[in-house]
Every structure is written in structure tokens, then in C-alpha cells.
Image 1: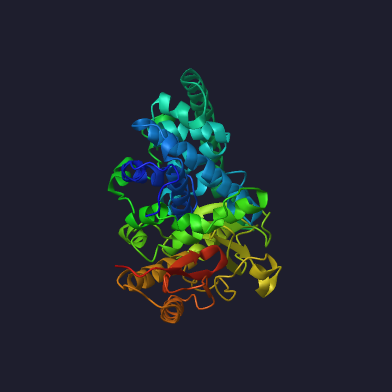
Image 2 (image 1 turned 60 degrees about the horizontal axis):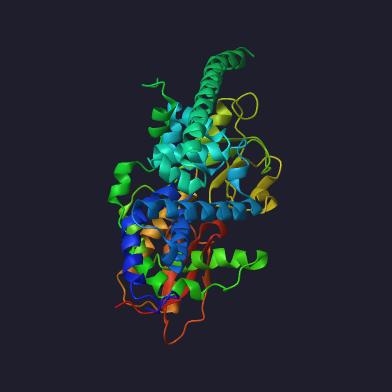
Length: 194
Length: 253
């Protein structure tokens, strides 16, 4: 093992503890936001590599998790910017991003889930991230504030608004799905008589 | 259809990695060793900048995927979930064309998209054109109608094909994602269980398993130099480039 640049003897055991304590959470965070598993693994590696270099700056306890999520968030944003330079499916699917299509096929196949994820995909990235952190990562407002870099008070307000916007988008998606369901039989009937 | 009208509860129900699954994840010891030994840093420049940043992002990816030949592979093999999930069905042989994203069933992406054409969701009149599957930049499969571009639809889009162009009027071809998954499952244990696989041996194993998985057109690239310190090959996967990398590593103890 090479000597850590901080030159502190406790850097390795501290990093090891952080790594072992938060690996699963960071992987899950990345996997929930990426299209393919390999991208999530890359993001995890990059996140912990940064964490190792900056282990002296990392806060203790649960705050370390929020710190890691914040790093992973930026790593994934960089990854997405790289993807956009390539022929990326994620930016071509009706404006939906990877968050909308990262899910399992059987999940997509379920109408209700498709509706919810399509609605999520129509929100702004800031709203999506707040909702995911609150619901999927189940973070308290204090940690959400640390990840996204705002005050704890504004998290509550922004979450409330994001929740409302999600509800509205779900409503729109449901109406759209209902319309398509009624149009399909008509279209088929037309096809069979022509 | 939905048991609750609370949008947050509904969102919770579609969490791609539920909390119960997170508890089953185990830290990867090989990645930890690579990080603290500086193995990942060795592969990146120390200064950042627009031109260098790209390298910095790619280099650890190579190093880490290379480690998949080691214990990181266990994480993959433990998890049966990574398999074909979604496909983008394009209405035209054009990456900017209207697209429907659907889940992939057991019959593969061609069948999934053909169903949309039959239903009139894509195209008009329920006619299913010959369809071709290509690998997009993200490694995801896109299925395009081949009628305009003919046999070279993937080439014309500058994306790799998964197979020779296959008409969808017959049985759909096997899903490329599934084939990649099978390839990984077949090849990784041969590296995980060995203390050291030399580069020629590694190339043979990879080519053999690629061919068995129906991925014989993938490239095997030497990402060396190999050295006395790092004489063994581990694997890196770049499905988006249909490429498998042989990456130098130290023998396993």
C-alpha cells in the first residue's frame, strides 16, 4: 500500500471503514441513476477513488454517506456529459433521461410503474434528484441538503413542490395511457375493416 | 390499478434497487485494494483540464472493469439481475427518429419492437418491416427498420450491429445483451479461479467464449504493456464498442 498523501497513519483504516460501511449505498445510488451496471460500477470506483484522495476532508458518521452521494452525483453528471457526446439513447428518448429507462424490463412492462417512471422522467433533474434522495435513498432532509448543496429548510419546500409536480405528471401520464387504451381498439377495428 | 394515490409511495414502489437488495450487497475487496494501492491513480494524469478530464474518466473505468476478472466479478455473478432490460424501438433508421422504449421479454428485443409495429404504435397499418438490432453508445440495443437503409442500417448509423441484418418475419435473433451476459458468466470464472492468466491464454479464452456466445465479431484488445510486475491479464468490458480488453495485473495470491 502506498503512503497516503495526507501522510496520516489513520487514513487507511478510516477509509476502509468508510468504504465497507457505504459501498452498498453508493453502488445502489449509482445503479438507480444509470442505464447499465458497468456505468454504476465505474461511478462507484471513481467516487471512492476521490474519497481516498480526500479522506481527510470527509465528515464522520452518516454525514460521510451524504458526502459520498454528493461526489457520486458529480461523477455521474460527468459520465452523462460524456455519454451525450456519443450516440446516447438516454438523450433521445422523448426527453427522458437515464433515470427513466434504467429500470428492469419487467418493471417497464407494468403499466403503473411505467406511468410513474415516465412522470418522473418529465420532471426537471433537480426535482428528480430530490425525490429520489428522499424516496429511494430514504435520506432525511439534513442529508439531502448536504448532497444537493442547499439549506435544510429549502429541502422541505422544494420537496413539497416536486411532489406536487410529480403528482401532476402522473395524472397526465395516466390520462395519456387511458387515451391510448381507448384508441388502440378503434385503430385495430379500422384496420380490420379496410 | 395503483394501490395508492400518494405519488411518493408510488415512486417508492418503482425503486430499481430496493432497500432489501442493498442490504445484500457486499463491498468489493479488490476495488478497495486497487484504490488504496494507487493502481487506479497510476492510470490517470495528475492535472485536470478539458482534454485530460476525459482520460481521467476513462482510465479508472478501464482499471476497474479490468478488476472484474477478480473479485468484483463475484458481485456480478452473485446478482442475477443484470440481463437485457429495455430496448429502444425506432420508427426510422435514424437515431433522432421517434422512439418507444419497452421492456425486453424472453423473445428478445426484435420481438418486443415487432409487437409495437404490429399494434400500430410504430408505423402505420400494423405492417412489420424488416428490423435490425444495433448497439447504441450506451451499450443498449436499438432496433431500427431496415427498409430504407437496407442491410447496412447499423453501419449507416455508425453503431455496431449485433448480428447480420435479420428480418423479423421469422424467429427473432437472440438478444445481444443476453449473449453478453452469458459470455461474462462463462469467461469470468476462468479468470477468477486462476492465479494468473497470461495474455495469449487470456485472448484464447476470451475469443473462444465470445464465439460460443455468438459474439465472434467482438474485438479482443491488448491494453498492455504487460511487465514482470504485471504479467497477468484481467478483463475489461466495453460492450458499447463491442470490445474486450486484456489489462495487465499482478498475479493473485
